[in-house]
Amino acid sequence: MATRKNATDDPLAPVTLAVGQEDLLLDRAVQQVVAAARAADADTDVRDLTAEQLQPGMLAELTSPSLFDERKVLVVRNAHDLSAETVKDIKAYVGAPAEEITLVLVHAGGAKGKGLLDAARKAGAREVACPKTTKPAERLTFVRGEFRALGRSATPEACQALVDAIGSDLRELASAVSQLTADVEGTIDEAVVGRYYTGRAEASSFNVADRAVEGRAAEALEALRWSLATGVAPVMITSALAQGVRAIGKLSSARGGRPADLARELGMPPWKIDRVRQQMRGWTPDGVAVALRAVAEADAGVKGGGDDPEYALEKAVVTIARAARSRR
Image (cartoon, rainbow, N blue to C red; front, side, top):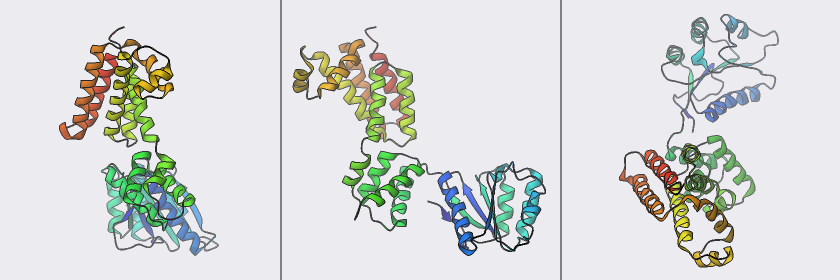
């Protein structure tokens, strides 16, 4: 979650830096300042500008004293994209900020526009770090913090299940926490999360598997990359691939019969029998064997046997899609 990087934690500090690339946290940093300003003065004038909108010379006008002595909040988005002339204006301003005005600079961090950050930090600006969450552990920490912020308790298993189901989008994770706390009384456990959200990650994984066993390599790879980008665990994808290939192997070796009879024999629901029949048209017994080996290799790769789980999955998907066309 967003963290403060200095001792000044007053949202009404003359200058606040919101630094990072996580949009939700950046928006919250801005909202916190605006809420504090309006709590102090309901008539606070809020100006929210992009870097392109803040032209050279405008800052002096926007920060000039008001005839009505009202409080102001000036938000500058994408401050790293400001022109050199406007950066000079802001550097001069942060050294002697006006009273009753709060300037919020939203900056991506990094090398671009670093001079502006350095100047604001040197002047004692309050800073809120809003880093991009790239690791599952960070998303898990975020979810736990969301529950705490809402005054609710959730088990560690529930928090993990929510991350597994929702993926990497913090807005969706925050929305899910908010919904659960609004709808459910008492401690939120894994069973509750399961009732609300289980199926999202699984559906994504089986979408990858369905496209692969149908021989649609490009679509399977696209679905795979989307799944990984949204935080679906690689082991869930290898599991879905294994189930898809095994279903084809089972049905291809089974005796003919009605879907209901085959369903009982193979332990599949009748609707799945119909789907697998459509998917197995291009398969051969050798193709099934090749696909099963590819799944086994991918499974080992994502469980620590390889350096690149994503590559292991892509290789498996391509191999399975080719095997699906072995009879064509």
